[in-house]
Length: 356
Image (spheres, rainbow, N blue to C red):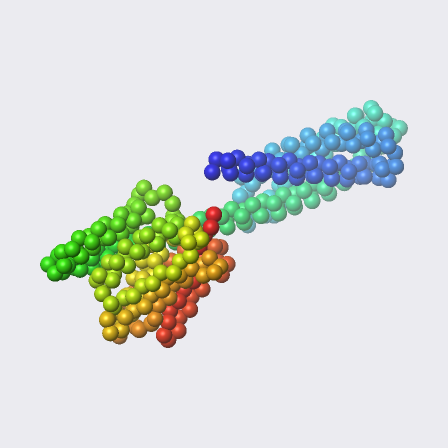
């Protein structure tokens, strides 16, 4: 992270230096053309001497202009103050640039770049030319400021959306845990009396599940993403608990390519999807719920199950899948990251794996 930050700073500095050099070069040529017109390119001595002086004068004025520019944006920061900013930029740039020209006039005369004597009309014409360039510079400054503000606003909006989605996902995870614990304890109470050996295995797998949940939900979690490999180890223990609880009412198959195990994903994705499937569908040995978790050839996660909706008198609210989908879309900049299909007989969702 430190190296990336350092390289980013170097890159920004190079861009800034390059843009400054281009602006200075263009301004020097335009100034020479405005001062001496076609003679500037026809006379080698005039071109070299005039360019050297112009670079010094324009460079000094440019440094003062760029130093004063942030003070103007600080004084007039609102987006609806564009006209006032442009007017103030024009005033500052015009005063600074014209003042430097008049200060440099004796230098031009000393090295013989202004011809014989002092030509007031020529000096005024050049001053008007400088004011015109200052107006263009003020407009370009406003465009650059507006673009920076837009980028800043976009970044802030994205950060707020990411924080909101992460908060919603954390809330969903916290909702899952109490229900999961209650159901496990009910199943365990039956197993202790009827099948002590199975109960011991059940407790062992249950501890693995809770250890994983604590690692991705606790305050010491290191990352918002986990590898497919770690998620699969978790879901295998979770499947054991479900199959013990529902027996033949739930059948879950895993078909994951080893080459994709290093891919990263949102933690507890499988648990949220499985709980959603069980929550909305009938589960019984006579009508088992078939759930399939697989990877596609292109390195995506495919979750599907048969649909056999419960007959209920009131809707069940489970926002988990909706929040999960939004989280994946945000991680992939909403560019077709998630494919959700739901027919009368089957539900399927394809989620991306993130490879870094």
